[in-house]
Length: 440
Image 1 (cartoon, helix red, strand yellow):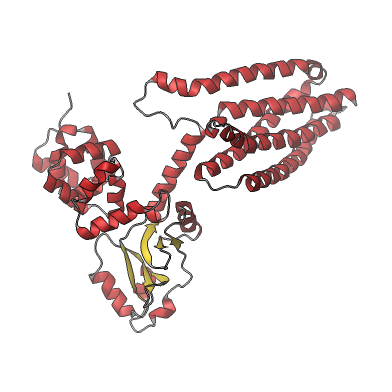
Image 2 (image 1 turned 90 degrees about the horizontal axis):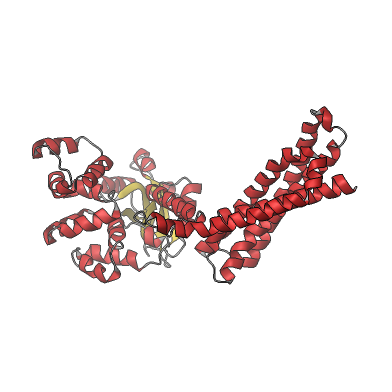
């Protein structure tokens, strides 16, 4: 049985007024019996700030419990980009019933956002911004910001356009406030202020916000008219979501939900663990082949973690970049493979030379290894180069191969690629050691 809040309405309202929206959202989710009560006590404007922080499923369920008038009030209080995000929680067939509860202008703005391709800059933009004509004076611009802007408008940056509505630049609010009333505003406007087009990939917008340390970036249509903005706060949220999605893709856990049973989760992960176990038997067999080399040069074991670690690291880098590029459809196979192999070759060569030097210095400290320290250092250096390059090659090619044969390229990560790297790295290491230390 769900628990209830044991406070009077007056006491609860006072408590809610003193805590942050995120804390209210936590209370709201923990006390389902009091959700309508909290909604009423907070008032629709305050509750709208809490609503966007709730779990998506709770948003949907609670919305369905409201009356038509309550739904209209809640939707009216939400910003356009939040409305778009909320509507997308429902099946497409239900979108119209929600859109019809909006005012005409808001409905058109939300429909515009919904029309963009998923992942485009336009799809994550907000229409709440301030744009003025380029011939506006400092006094007029300041007056507009202080008297005409609404609570929903983003005012940290003001954008400007010419008589044809073409974007001309921007000025930060702080600079506008510090400007003298009689100054020529056109000389203060930054005509190099970055922008993105509405159909650009959202990653381009996020990168520009990060690279140029922007508070927000304008989104332009093909006529270079401003249609929206993407704020730094929105960018941070999207970057976090993108990072979490990427990690989930790479570790192969995105196909299960929180409510899935342990058995279902096991079925997703177990095949790759079993393949890993089989390949580890192959690794054990490989070590047996080089048993003589190991017995004759026990010091080889000291540098085995170095070979495995470096090969695994470069392989993980290659496969991560490749899977991410395939997932976003942002790479050309030949160009990407060539570039990654060039990077792998350079990194492998540098790591091999550095590793050889470090091993030589390390062996000089061990008197018992002075007879073969040059050969051992050379073995590690050459092995590092070949093991790392082969690992980079496997990391960049394996996703393409799996995708070509209709398999899920993301399955190449985790246990499978790690075991392949271990197998090839150890094989190269002990083969090079046998050639240099046993045969020469």
